[in-house]
Amino acid sequence: MEYADLLIEHHDKVVVIRLNRPKAMNALNDNMMNELGDALYKFDADPAINVIVLTGSDKVFAAGADIAAMANYTYADTYPGNYIGRNWEHILNVRKPVIGVVAGYALGGGCELAMMCDFLIASETAKFGQPEIKVGVTPGAGGTQRLPRAIGKAKAMDMLLTARMIDAAEAERTGLVSRVVPADLVMTVALEVAETVAAMPVSVAMQIKDSVNRAFETTLTEGVRYERRFFHAGFGTPAQKEGMAAFLEKRKPNFEGM
Ligand code: CAA
Image (cartoon, rainbow, N blue to C red; front, side, top):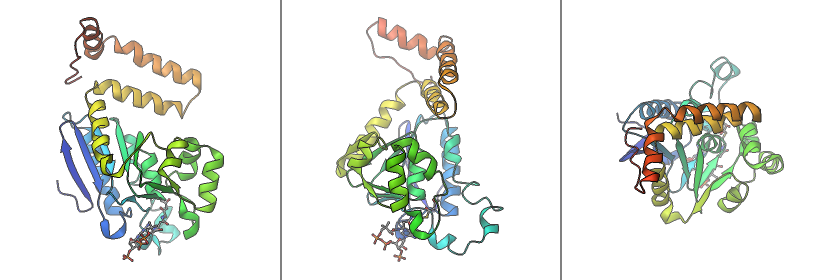
């Protein structure tokens, strides 16, 4: 399917979804978020895909929610209309790994969408910020919740209250992104990382994602118990048989279809 506001690229078991509204700095509007949900669900269900990469252009990941579209919203459009809630969080239902790749600005809703990815790879050009306060609102897609969990309260409060942007180096230092890569190499490296993950057993990748996300929702004891169920269940799967046999036979494992 062709999308108006997304570009799709296939790389074997990796699919790249690019946010694509270049004239509006990839501002996230209703159509783009509907299309993103559609694409995410489609690829999550596609047995030929193991990993999803979400990115923007080399200039901007996304400059936030579309201010032009929402400037005249009323309360009825937002709360009863479930603005954000109705179509921004489909990404949280995706069970396969989603790697975010940020070059340029990830601001407001753009930063929030990036933080809903499983981990982030940043270009040296990346800039992250939650400048909503400057347009007279609080963040609406988890900025006050995921940012402090990602980088700690002090840094998050600083960013949220002053609207200052952090660059890629500060984002890496604070743990917001996992790697920073020179601008001209970022997609190459991101695809290498995605292909590494895609070569692993997808069922185990999904269990790890499920378990790690559980860590943010429950106690340590419950979280470890949750993890242990997956570990035990692993002994009933082809991935465990193949992975351990390949190790003992000193060969590369083949996790195709696992
Ligand atoms: N919504 C709608 N349009 C946007 C936009 C946004 N969030 N961000 C940029 N644009 C548009 C601009 O209006 C401009 O359009 P025109 O060419 O038609 O005038 C075009 O994109 C290019 O933008 P600039 O001319 O401003 O480009 P710049 O390089 O000078 O600045 C920028 C880039 C720093 C990203 C700046 O555009 C900016 O500050 N954007 C707004 C960032 C922001 O406030 N984001 C938070 C939005 S609220 C939100 O996201 C709520 C939430 O939590 C869900």
